[in-house]
Each structure stands twice: as structure tokens, then as C-alpha cells.
Amino acid sequence: MQYLEHTIIHENETAKLRLYLIDNLGMTPDKVRPLVLICPGGAYAYTSEREAEPIALSVLGRGYHAAILYYTCNPEAARKEAEFPTALVQIAKAIRYLREHSAEFHADPERIILSGFSAGGHAALSLGVFWKRPFLQELMQTEPESYRPSALLLAYPVVTSGTFTHSESMHNLLGDRVSDPSWLELVSLEKQVDASMPPAFIWTTDEDGAVPAENSLELALAMRRAGVSAELHMYRHGSHGLSLANKEVCPDSEPGQAPWCEVQNWIDLADTWIKGL
Image (cartoon, rainbow, N blue to C red):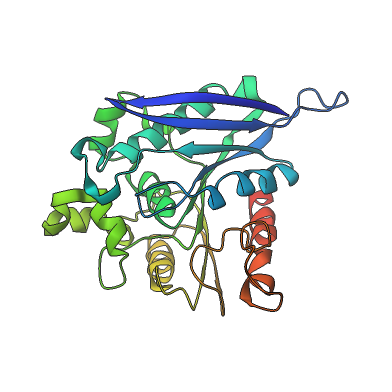
């Protein structure tokens, strides 16, 4: 395995891109693999380690390259330069970088899957719905197809700024603009879905008390109305932020509780979905 790091720069803000690349076996030196780019959650205040390397290692074990983007966050909306669309542009630049170097990385440029957890799901989904928008094209100064994700893998994502929103994420994302209805409308992503959005795999839990399941349900319904393929799984039990829902990331959970029951198989279901892309 090769381990590489690359710095993504947007204006004065930097993001760290960490790559985990599988070495091809001698018998298949030209094999290309899907690559999963992971955006951890953390309410746009930080990037959660529980949703970073453990996910990458699980992805590697299924035969895909992995990358993690530690995008710029903005705890307590302290810095205007770190607010929307900084993280969005960093993710777009990361996708473009991975696609431009896909031959070098033995990655399939048509199967670069953008994955996001919680607020990281909002960040990933933002690129999925905004990739063709003029404001992003102006910031990127390149053809939008170069940074369009091939597909989205979203775990308990923050989606809406409406009734079921995660207020802390919206505050950190928008800062003072959080009181402006036009900005709230823009980042309520279920309202931004159209037919150009990539397909998505979405999972959530009915018991999520931080980011209610309605976020995922509203997204899936909007995608269905737009004619975009969506696979949605809503588990009966489980709290927010389960990541892989195993002892590695939930060390204090007792066997028999929700993380040890039905939720763990989401990564296997996502594996099957990726293979079908």
C-alpha cells in the first residue's frame, strides 16, 4: 500500500488530503480500482477521526483505493473565510486532483465515489448538487465534469436547513448568514436536487436524535422526483455518528446494543452498490 499526502488550497485556507492506495499484485499491474474519498463529520466544527481512517481501512479491505479529506472547519463560526463555500471548493479540488492523477494512482476516473458522514455528508452532497452551478465553476475555473463525483455515499447526512436541521452545522457553515433566509434556502440541499446529481447510497437510523432520519428521507424523495438513482437504508435502532458501528469506533458499547446488531452491515451493502455502478 502507498500512503501519500497532498495539500488542497483555496484562497488562504488549506485542507489535507490523505491517500491510501493499494499496490497492484504482479499478475495485475494495470488493474484500476474505484476510489472512495471520505469527508468525516463533526458539525463543520472539526473532522471526526472515528469517521476517517477506520472507514478508509474498511474500504481498502474491499479492494478500493481510499482517501480522506480533512476540509476546513469553522467552530463557532469564528472565521468568515472558513464559511461556505470553502469546504465545498476544497472537496471539488480534491476530486479534480484525484481524477487528474487517476492513471498514476491506478484509479478508475469514472468511479470516484464521494463519501460523507453527518456534516461531512452535507459537504459531500453540496458538491453533488452544486457541481454545475455557475458560482462554483467561477471559483474552480475549469470544466465542471473534472470535479463531478461519480457517486455519493452518505451516512446519516445533514441535508436540510428546515424543520429537521442540525442547527450547529448550519451555524458553523454560514456564520452570520445563518439568519438570512436566502442562504438557508441555498444550503437546504433537498431543494437543490436536479437530474444532474450523481447517484447516491444513503443510510440513517430511526433513533438518530442529532440529525433526524427525515434528512435522508427528504433527500431520497427529492432524488426520486428528479429521476436520480438512490438506495436508502433506515435502520430501526442506533444513535448518531456510529461510523462502522463496531468495537473499533464504539469501544464503550455493550454487545447486544444497536451498534452490534443491524447497523454494521451498511458497509457490505455499500460495497455491493459500488460494484454495481
